[in-house]
Image 1 (cartoon, rainbow, N blue to C red):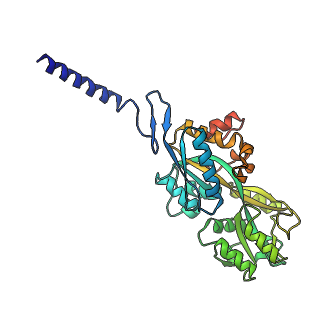
Image 2: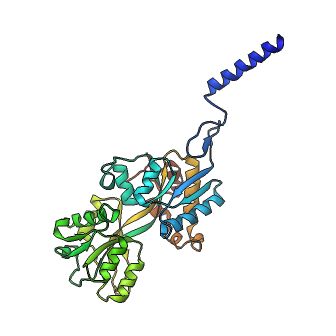
Image 3: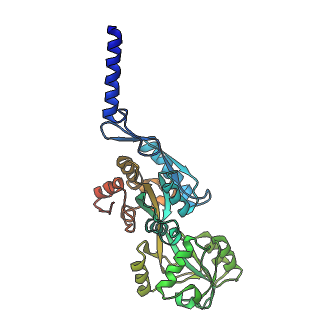
Length: 339
């Protein structure tokens, strides 16, 4: 009888402790494979990082970032093939990834529920970890009469695939010059089709968003001496930056392409690393530090590390930063907006 009573008392005590503690001492899940300890510190087993297509810069650079972080910060980071900026944001929304590459304009569309996300509505469960490098909006023309955006009137111009990020970049640029699609003869083509039609003379100009130099434009310049980029004048550039804060001023140096001797002023969108809000602060801090602390030492791993700086990393204003990233940038003397 004494043994039975002792057993019952022990069972009651265990039940009471579980009820008061709300769970096991190790705490509850906060993100994929993550837990919080009783002391409040976090641990996470894996970060799933959606990047881009296997042949693109997002995937190649993302894979290097993931591998270096895995070896350094004590958390496994797995780079996965992504489905483009919009698809990557959707992965964060559906909690199928913790990290994602995204263009700065598309992340703003998602956060505000506009353009590409007009029908779906706002996606707000993510923050910025940091901006890594610039993808420039290049208005490529083969018609020598096109020297300004206004000269596109009545011309055949590729504005990217319908509903794509490039399409909205084209609309933004035209709008800054008080123009609409009705003012041009738009064609809705992918990057590759635009490059081919420029080469074949089927279109006069095309909006291409990519890092410069872009291989397709290099090849075009090698076969067509009239290949040039249209520069944005200061008045309209400032108008565009004021209306669309996800852009930054960008200058493509003369000589980047064989047929272009002068500097070209345009705008760029950032290749930004996004992180889900529920990823622990210390994990995000460690990852941010790993990427931005000594990028020059990692250029041999991937050339894009040469473009990574603390200043540009902290330059995004259209979407708040994760608190873990803000902590790192704060230590470097840069204050960023958080939620």
